[in-house]
Image (cartoon, rainbow, N blue to C red; front, side):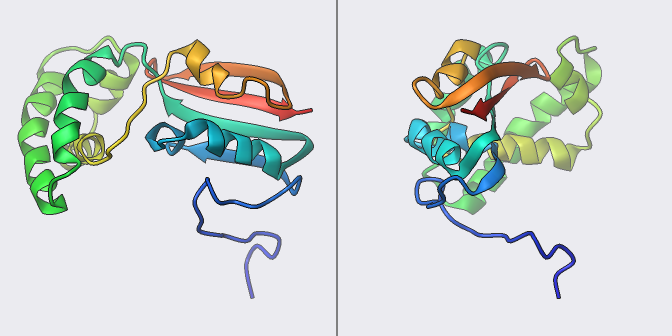
Length: 173
């Protein structure tokens, strides 16, 4: 017997979800920015929601992450193709200077302040997460909103999170 009889967990690709007007809310946190066809995934989320339901996505923001796009994306092109154990090893090498930087130098950026409180292993997990995926899109506010262009969504709004990402929320018409 389930603790939540109305809840059901399904593992599937956002490209392949096949729901039509079935949910009050559909959300994707930390997935859309790693997809080759992000718009297709957003369309599927919108289709899955009932009229009046909400759709929410959280994606990497370009603003204040320019340094990642400039320096980490080229490295990611290599590390995403390596055996995972090699990428794990390399993430240690990249974590040491980042960890020292956030611990020794007072941070002004909200996300860097947050990272400065993390233990080494947690910071290393973030670095590993940046080196592993083949695709990592970083969108400006307008670009994140544009993922919903032409879809039956109203009251669309984008909220900046930690000065480095966007949460986009809308209501299905």
